[in-house]
Image 1 (cartoon, rainbow, N blue to C red):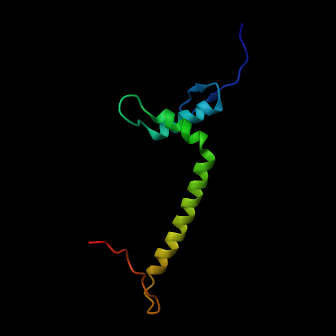
Image 2 (image 1 turned 180 degrees about the vertical axis):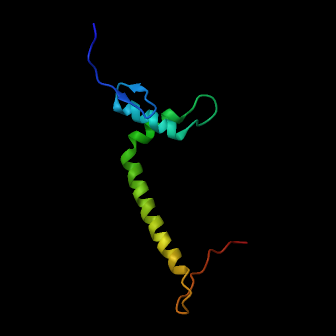
Image 3 (image 1 turned 90 degrees about the horizontal axis):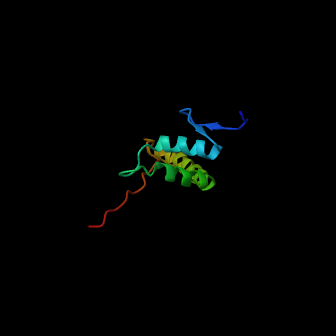
Length: 93
């Protein structure tokens, strides 16, 4: 006898019983083959999904740093005589 059920599909159209499994499949596909032999991508995808909040915070901090960095670079291109360039990193000999 036929039964009614709920299913979830990844972007390739593969069926999964839970939304987590479908999302993990999509993340693993984005990562591609990782490592030699059997791919590590599905395991990494599970970790990424579990640690999502922490990763989103890191990406938000990264975006802010990149924005700040872009502003610094833009200012350093200024050719005004009143602008002094910051000293570069010194390399130990």
